[in-house]
Image 1 (cartoon, rainbow, N blue to C red):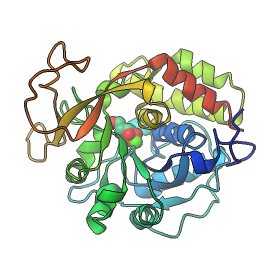
Image 2 (cartoon, rainbow, N blue to C red):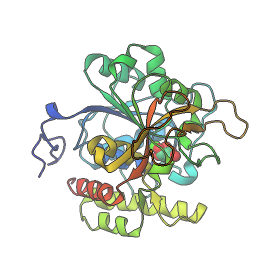
Image 3 (cartoon, rainbow, N blue to C red):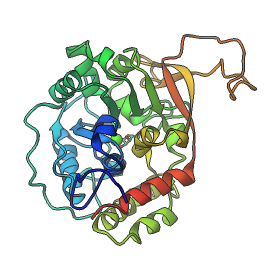
Image 4 (cartoon, protein in one colour):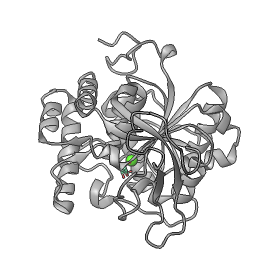
Length: 337
Ligand code: RIB
Ligand code: CA
């Protein structure tokens, strides 16, 4: 049983909030973002959820964040609405995958919880400037984070780490080269990857390993609680769309990987690399160019060797302990009402 403090209807945190890492989750729910919220709340000191346009419009992803908070009985966690469009480019959404609502599947009631009165960018700035050690967990286009860094440059020295879902060491999903969160707002991603803040990058090469199949969905459904049933219905829809569109056999849970990396660092193997965001390529715009040349054969275990290329600016996830990841996620979901 979690021995911490009540954060919801009967839900307790893993340990006292004062001993837990303070974080802000910046998201665009989104089926996998919903799971990131549910995984984060009992294990991290979730100071707030900020929303940004991505999978759907800002209005829809914000309503979805409130629906998830209410589903799980987490209504005390503030939700602040953020940027409605990328810094430069036209908005891109992913309704073909997440549905018209952005969280199709379960019939969740319209939320009644009021939004936090501050804009997400101001919420991030105010929280980071007033609370020491706040880690950011972006699982969406990086528009809010980049806007906050530009508006208040002192954030770069106060944020100890950013654990983000985005990019890829290998192929993309929005294009052959670019992953959706980076593709939506490459200029914002460039701001973040050049900020000097330590970054854990959970890209598609890693997150596709967190593939929810029928087995995992039935484990979640069999939890028998309200939250487990709703999550199973979310994943039924999400997996159905991916099967229909791409013939995929499962549903990759991208966003919870960025949360799991902070809860249990042993779950993900990271490698230091320089990551550059392509801003101009005709075919490669939004690509995260990961320089792994120094990770020559025999050095993956961390041996010596000549480092070529620029100094690493990120830890890039390469391997997930899939079994333990799903055990953590499903055990956490079982704690909810
Ligand atoms: O490419 C996957 C990412 O794009 C995930 O964060 C998903 O929620 C969408 O935002
Ligand atoms: Ca997302």
